Length: 563
Image (tube, rainbow, N blue to C red; front, side, top):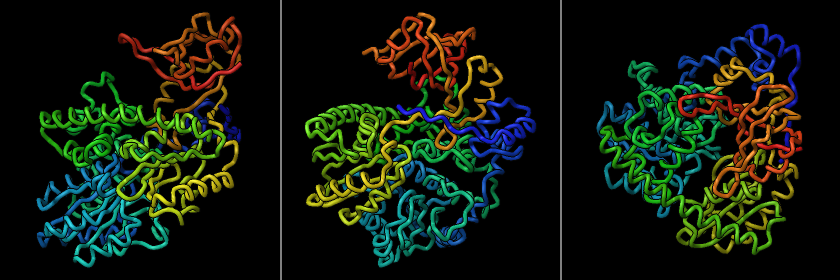
């Protein structure tokens, strides 16, 4: 692991903020590192309010979208709310459809089948709309590149409103409105919304048009927070506001579907991390194993007993997903060993019977193991479909763009993407992708990095610091949990391995005459030797609070240690 210590900001800037906020140097430094340099910025960061949300009409085409929806309602038209089968898509469909249904009944929903239709807007979905007398489709979390699909819909007199957050191509679809803050000609102040976030801006505009306030929309924020967490978008700006208030809804009064998913969780307060690891995988499991419709049914169900039935079915899908994921990961690791490809700059694998619903998870697991940009292919109809995952600071989407001649279609983000290609082009693409990554990646990016915010001493850790650090939440990209480094610490003689295979490490550590802290290192069981015989070592860690039998103690969550 590479430990990269962030450069310290200018001392004058830190001191100025320290004085304005009356906080210590550690807190002021962490804030400046996050781009927060003034009292007002700090106030917004620590005390976000719903008033911090931008006017939705600042988004290009929002007026056209609202006007077309209101016209459809006035004329009694049938409206189809269409979205992708992942968490972002299914939460977005649940959000927009349940809001519209609160005052208009002619609303249907459509999630494409992952295996039959694939990602994004499908011809089958448009035919479904045509067969059912639907004249307006609102597409969420997809559609920005669906030029041919929208043209096809236009021949059937079906209008499209596209709400997407993926990068557009050179041409936009010929839709009534294209809401995407990443459009070159869109001056919306914040362009890191997820698909459900763009959907929320649409219902915010519709609500304004109906003289409703932002407070009327609070019950929908549990869906938005779930999508923000699952889609790994930056927890900055509007996303931070929406995530914070959405978490409050999840913890106080969630919709029955989310309540049913978390009712066996023993934690008092759920964090963004809990949403990522508890709620999101279960919602995703519906589309991976069965059909994304099941996720929408759960998230739009208002009877708790029925929601519990849906949740138990989804729980079974999640258990099946885990079994498949383990099995395919083992097979993929064996393929890498057998092909002797560990020296490559990329990992690109294909097996025709791998389950399409879990190849993205497998790609993530392989990236963790070998730390390379990774693509996992499987057979999908007469083509190959794949999921890509990247390493920190490498843009896999740009690399795919450079190899686009071998692909049928692709889309995604810097760190995750999906694609399809013809089987005869697999090897050509694999070679081109390896060549492109070799040419463009810095060798350092192939070594896992721990980005360290600050070096501190154990004597700096006190209740006030911990209280202020908790106010940095919710954590996520561009507002990660602060990581600290402390040098020359020693175990007090109680170090021991934990876990079925001794893969984890439990310690009690001190620095000089400091207070003793409990520390847990997940996956660091192999570092036990470095802590023995009171040898000094350096640690990088996050500061956690551990609750056990009603008692809360400070615990260091170790990320790495070395002598």
